[in-house]
Length: 325
Image (cartoon, rainbow, N blue to C red; front, side):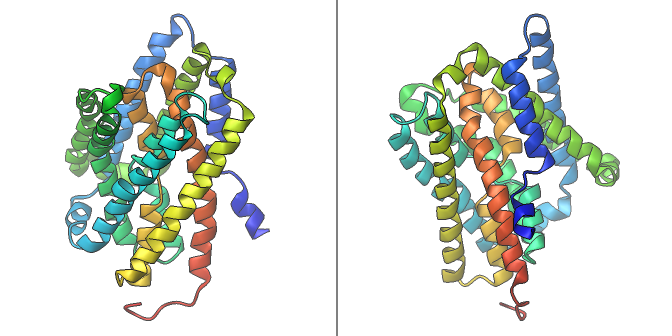
């Protein structure tokens, strides 16, 4: 029963699927379309504003202390994943529908998640403080590094101009910085109303997904996508996650980290953020491409939640380590 419970999709995943379905069969058209674009831009700004307000100054300072752990997570997120993604995308271009091979590469260039990385680290009795610092730092750096890496890797095809970085900074980083600077006045409110802020975060993602899938329908994406593409993407996502989990676990032990640090490295280094990925994709890519690009991310997101939930319980069921282990 516990295994079946862990395999059950969470409410947000079900809402995500429902929103994608609504966007596919009932897309926004006519006068509603520009209104939806304004609402999306505002919701994304609020999303990153609240993320900035949640992050305390003490957390930022503490994040600089455990540098070996953070460098290991950084290497997994922005070196290991991109290398694997580059190899996969090159081999999948002739196999998948147009845009999806790029989506696999884009998935591999994204930062780690914050909430699920910390939650799974806590469930597994890992180093929660380090997970908070690493996941938060990964998201901040991802605002710069994801567009930069995407521009560099796709520059020969002229797909994504470097000027897109300015758009990302203006729409994502500026609200984040303003939110953090506002923390002395609104931090207590944000911390005390986590359900409200969570609803804003998830609502912003759902709006972008609805818009993206509506645009995908208008451009004929689903006429190009078959069950075979979905099956290939699921296999690729599973293999990709398994490789990163094995490599991060082995590297943590070879580098002499404690078990609590290993847990933080494994969960922070193996995740990819849907919360950051969807808004950044909405800025980097033309509307007609967003649906195809974020589909690999949506599949990977669900798979990582299922696998890491099982893995966290496995860690938690092991004997409590002695100090230093």
